[in-house]
Length: 395
Image (cartoon, rainbow, N blue to C red; front, side, top):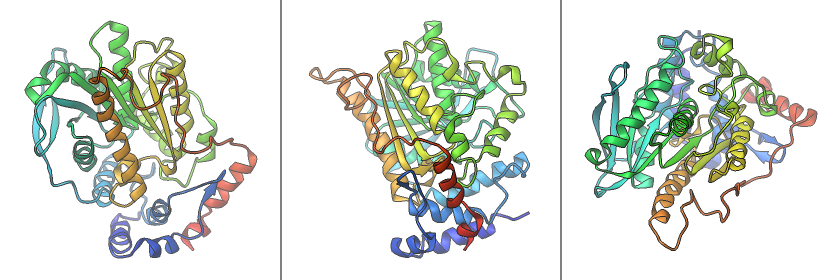
């Protein structure tokens, strides 16, 4: 089994020792799907990722967890130094265990700032406080807000719906303890990436349906929203772009033990009958992501339900880009934009001349697309197969 040693060596030599122009040449001919080129730095990373099987379904759970921690440390870059952190224990009033958490505070940030409760990605099976430490510091620094990262329980040791229960407990904790954490109790956002984004919106939905206080904002990076159906992007980007079709099945089957639970709205939020009452939402998808289409379908459902939503596709990025801010300027810009948008949405709410909205669009249902929507079909599928041909990626 190939180890992460080659991957680590490649990243250190190429990304830390070569200028951008040289890396672009090493990445090879541009990978373009329906007119959208893949970010060259991510294209080069795809070539390096082929050096290891530690992050594939062939690896056991402990190895995949260790690989994610090691890989995110490599690609996340140097953590912002102007952000401090401290450990927090989340007690709760249900039957679940206390949860470890980490509070990030930018230096000099006054009390009464917004608070983002952040739920990490990793397919509900991998990830934790360490894998997402750098991106949480980055979000705190760029958004000038406090971040409370939560170490929820992972499958398969704690299968569905344990993570949902933990996320709900974390939101309740933040709502009642925001002032003690230095934040404004009226400015509590909930967010996450991938599996964490799924948990964030599921938690907000459960709170809305129960009539409980929910988050004031949602920040969602490429959420998985439907465990029951395949979309065109799932077939289009099934292999070769970090998250694969095999990964999706592996994570789902470790998290949800029974096929009968796939359609549960706590697992597949896109299937919820009523999405009204959710808070203003900023939703970001990645153009080269197999779960892109289900995230965007969910964004449209939000708009149709009267929820204020800004949906932005980052057309040249892949699933997991929030952890790659140390390698790719495009990933860094995308995460910085999202952090700034969240802070701006709270600042705008405080201005009497601005409506309560998640970001700049003038209509609650306006969707923001930096690039053209793809129209998957046989031609597009062939272009993807050509783009990820092993000979091309390794030659």
